[in-house]
Image (cartoon, rainbow, N blue to C red; front, side):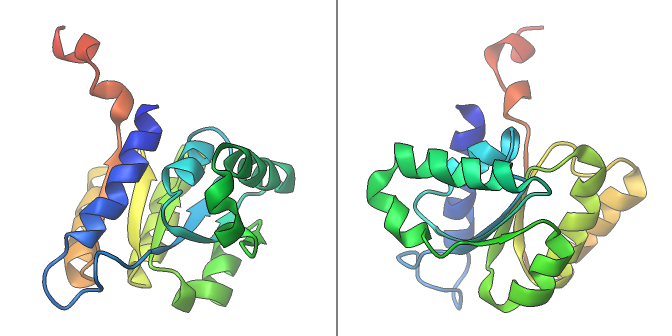
Length: 168
């Protein structure tokens, strides 16, 4: 799927960072915020990374996303046996922020901006489903924080990159 492809591309963006960053051979420690729908695709898109935490208000969704992942990628499943589970991303960051390199955010739209800002303040790279924010001032602050905290960000807008949109 295009979401999985974009989520797969995000670690490559991070691994192409300037000198002084970790080796591209290292796996990123990723937290998934939102495991249903678009977030579930992010779980699978991060199959080559270490998924250290998964957060969803619905525990069944989080467990289902990991179960689906294990069925599709049995060779990778063992690395994710110890994945921590949370129902509140703020608690996840409180407890695990030192263990997380990047986050994939696929929760309802009204939480994209708050979750991303919190992640950026903690120095975490962020892949976020659209919309990244709702007002211009939020977008400006996100751009400012990306520079200030030296983090990479990417917004998933795959559905609007198909040929049908380009030919209108």
